Amino acid sequence: MDRGDFMPKVKVYSTPTCPWCHRAKEFLNEIKVEFEDINVAEDQKAAEEMVDKSGQRGVPVIEIDGEIIVGFNPDAIKKALKMEE
Amino acid sequence: MLDTVIIGAGIAGLTAAIYASRKRMQFEIVSTNFGGQMMESGEVLNYPGIKKSTGAGLASTMDKQMKFNNVNVKLETVKEIKKEGSNFAVVTGKNTYDTRSVIIASVAGPRELNVPGENEYKNKGVTYCAICDGPLFADMDVAVIGGGNAALESVDFLLNIAKKIYLINIEEKLIAHEYLQERIQGQEKVEVISKAATKEILGNGKMVTGLKYEQDGEEKEIKVGGVFVEIGRVPNTDFVKSLLKLDEHKHILIDCTTHTSVPGIFAAGDCASGHEYQYVIAAGQGCMALIKAARYLASKKD
Image (cartoon, rainbow over all chains, first blue to last red; front, side):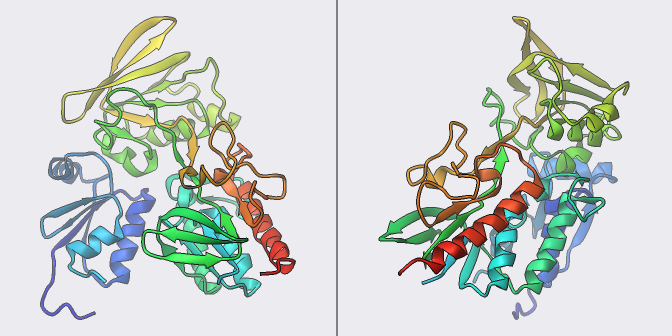
């Protein structure tokens, strides 16, 4: 899929033990979207940032150009990336 | 017209799909997500042929196994199964599949407490997946609700993360496997509170701050930042409640060879009556359901 020069800034807040986080990252890899992986189990400051931004304490949290998606939701990720089928 | 539609991609549905593929049946497997409860459980230490793995590890292996068998799980949620003569229409949000038989392996999900504050603070301190969200409760006081395997696995997982762990058990004794009980015995940061019914989740409008429970007729309160609910499972069967006979806990009633109350529909795994939520049982039932469906189809006229 050609997205032209549209390169969104994607962050994944995750924990190493969270299966849905792995799934979300695998999915981003599959659709060839680069992302920054932030381990909130180790980075306490990032964990607080995630809680502030999302208003909740669950992972994964995926941030796409400022838009916050809580949980692994492929349809919502595609929509935020403007990749709807 | 398909031979069968498999609903659910937990271990039961995926096992049925492996057999369906190898029997060269015309089939689809549809599921809200891939992996079912495998994705939310920690260690796997009792699956024959696998010495030690995790739920996610098992799901990952099964993902590869699906690719090897050319099985493509369609991520769609089934809304309804319609009976059309002796055949069926499986209706999802996206498609309708006409099929001669159906295998329901629609898994189970976490049972909720149904107390005030639970919904309000869902993900805001209330969680149903310790291995997912546990690390976000570092150095905090937390409560785990339950007394079974999942509850004790959660306590075990939180031992190196949380500051203090209250285990709130509604029963007098823990019912978890003995090896799990051994792991938490003598742990200083674990306090087991027995015969305690959780009554309310408390919060400050943003996040959880505590919970209320009742013990011996007395109401008590503890301050915690996290509440891990591990009080069992609810079968995901609402979409077939008017079509199939269910038991009193909403499991699909099956006989010992996975037949449901409707000929042509088979059920397997945690959504079905059996009440023992084990990977190996789900796998066995998924296999049984597919083979019984194939035998049923062989003698079916249309």
